[in-house]
Every structure is written in structure tokens, then in C-alpha cells.
Length: 184
Image (cartoon, rainbow, N blue to C red; front, side, top):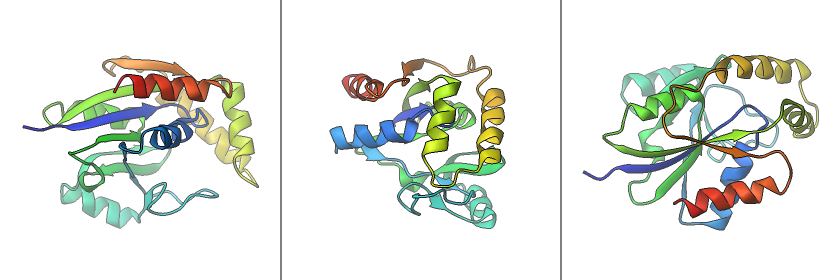
């Protein structure tokens, strides 16, 4: 039986996961980007169907009940999930997940060949990035995500074969992309 090949990136808010995925896609157009669903509202510059499929809580619940989701979880009070129809059997899939999503993916070893990269960055750099990525950043939301990330990323010992990449300085993006693409 053929398996979905999935490269999954996880990391705290502001770690650069999305930028690394974009750079991997630019460097290797044969990769297939996984577009997840979420019930949260779009941030500045996010586009429905490009960054996420932004759906209502009712639509999300219906997809879960119809077994249309490979994985679904609640993170920072919002629902996130990967619909089966966002994956390609013919290509290597790449996307961003949260720790709970990775745990769910690891339960599907019979249909998924999974590689997970944990993108690490200092707390100071994460806060600076989050402040700079929107015109009018919501400070309360940034600190809420910061606190939630501390809890959600406290113990990743349940995640199997986790590979760690550092994304602290601007040139680290290139190193992260090169490492991911060299290991395909």
C-alpha cells in the first residue's frame, strides 16, 4: 500500500515555520503544500485557501464527524486540522503542525511516512518577529500565544524521531531549508 509522504514542521509562534515551508516550496516546486483548516480568524496578510482554509466551528466539526480529517486538534483555543483532500499521494507533502497534530499523525504509520522538524528559536527573537509581522500587533494575543506555547512545547518526548533545526539568525532559514531538502 502506498503511503503519504509528509514533512511536518512544528515550533512555537514566531519560530519561522511558515517562512521555511515557503522557502522549501520555492526551492523545490515538486513539493506539495499542505493547506490545513482552522476555525481562527485570518491574521494580517493571510489568505483563505493559501495560508489556511478558514472555516466555521460547525464546518470543522462536520468534517471531523465525516472522517474527512487526517488529524484534528485544539491549539490556543482554536481548532486546526488536516483534511485528507489536502494531501497528495504522488508528491512529498510539507506543512506546519502543532505537537498534538504530530501525535495524531504518528498514529497513522500505516498510511503516512512522516518526518518531523522542530524549529527552535529564542524567546526574544520570537517576540520581536511577532511584533514586526503585523501592522498593528495585538500584544495581548502575542503574550497569550507565548504562554500557551510554553505549556504546549514543554515536553515533546512523546514525538518520535524529532529532528531539531535552529532558526535564530536570518541566514539560518537557508540552512533549515537545505537540511530539509537534502534529507528528502
